[in-house]
Amino acid sequence: MASIPPEAAAARCRIEIDKLRKGFLASGNEGDREVVAVDDASFRINDGEFVALLGPSGCGKSTILNMVATLIAPSGGAIKVDGAPVTFGKPERHVGYVFQKDTLFPWRTVEDNIGYALELAGVPSGERRGRVAEAIHQAGLDGFARFYPASLSGGMRQRVSLMRTLIANPEILLMDEPFGALDTHTKLDMHSVLLDLWERQRQTVLFVTHDLGEALTLADRIILLSARPGRVKQDFRVDFARPRDAVALRETRQYAELFSRIWHSLGEEFTKSRNA
Ligand SMILES: Nc1ncnc2c1ncn2[C@@H]1O[C@H](COP(=O)(O)OP(=O)(O)O)[C@@H](O)[C@H]1O
Ligand SMILES: [Mg+2]
Image (cartoon, rainbow, N blue to C red; front, side):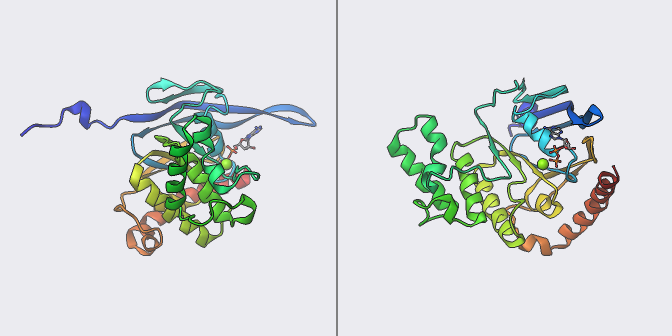
């Protein structure tokens, strides 16, 4: 029987963060001072892993994500994507980003928003129409192709945002609290949509959230950050079976057990950030 060579068995590292640091200059009436948002943060994400970056508000989650996305330059440390250092202002082609605020173009219809990246890439209109129609269907938006964002609900707009990024087939997906503004049930609905889409493609995901329930529902691993300056406090494996049912999962004992293990540790960081 042929054995698997060790190099094939070893998981491929897609994102590598090493001793990352970011200080911002904050101005006040007593002069400028440096606010250290992230300090000495290190972690690695392997191919196909869904990782949640969890921590209290203000601990540096978005700052880390924006450095990986090359939107912000680090003050120290290193970021590698697929083994190569990233360059500030030069996003990798195969990395997609979904923002918290929906950034849809209000003057474009659902289908024209979703197809935007393909238009930029010069994909011929026949192929574009087919891929957009498929994306609209996958997101459960059939019948809304010609609507403008203003006439959609918040959940529907986030579905459009998600598909607008996914249509370019990013292998690596960065998401910054994309469902943070949605009510509880719409959020659960979006978890089902995202889980369903991710099961098909198994992108490598770095998903920022302050919501432990959301992290447990979606991720394979939860990286818990400390209060500011953000560094890795703990790294938890979430080994619930897949495919997952976003609603039923929350009623299981495993979910409750892992929730309470992480909740206490997260609570300590909330307290620190409140008293900072
Ligand atoms: N552009 C900026 N200028 C100055 N301070 C900033 C800037 N962006 C973020 N910060 C500060 O860095 C810290 C971390 O922010 P952020 O990464 O947005 O946290 P999170 O996403 O975890 O809520 C906060 O104290 C915030 O005020
Ligand atoms: Mg943030």
